[in-house]
Image: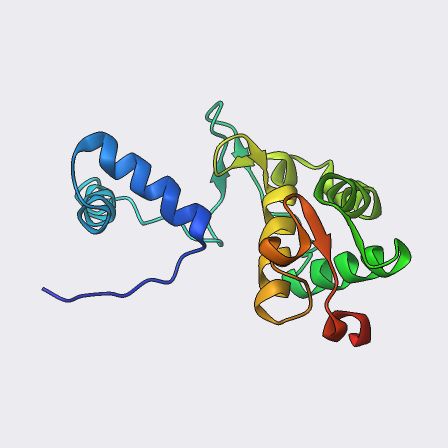
Amino acid sequence: MKNVALFLPESTYHALSALANSTGIEVAHFCSNVLTDYVANNEPPPTLASPLRSERSSEIIKKPEIEISEMELIRDIILILKKNGGSEEKAIVEKLVYEKHVDEFTKPYWQEPVGGSVPRWQKNTQFARNSACKLGLLKRPEDAGRGIWALTDKGWKFE
C-alpha cells in the first residue's frame, strides 16, 4: 500500500472531514473508500477533462472553451480593490468580478454548484483570493477584518 499526501484548501478539507465524520471514519480512509468505489465500478475518478454531471440532474455540463485562470481572477480582485481605495466587502468584490465576466459566468459550467451551494465562478474567485493572500498581495482576514478583502503594500505594487 502506498501513501499519498494531499494539500487541500481548508474549506475542501472541512467538507471532506464532515462527510467522513458522518460515516464515522477518518478523512484519509473516507477518501480512499471513495476512490476505491470508482475503481470497483469501473468508473474513472473525476478529472477536469471529464464532462461534469450536474448535482441536480444527470445533465452533462461541458467545460467552456474560454478558461478564466486563477491568476486572471487575482488580477481582477486587485484591480477592483485598487479602484475602491484598497479594501472592500467580499460580496461587493465578488459581484464586480462576476459583472466583469458575466458573459462567461452565466453559462451552466460556471453556475454549477461546487462545495455545497456555491457556484463555480464564486468558489474560483474565493480560491483566487486565498492564493492572493498566500502570495502576500491581500491581507489575511485577521488583519483586514471579517468579510473584508484588502490589499497589502505588495498588492498595491502588483501589476
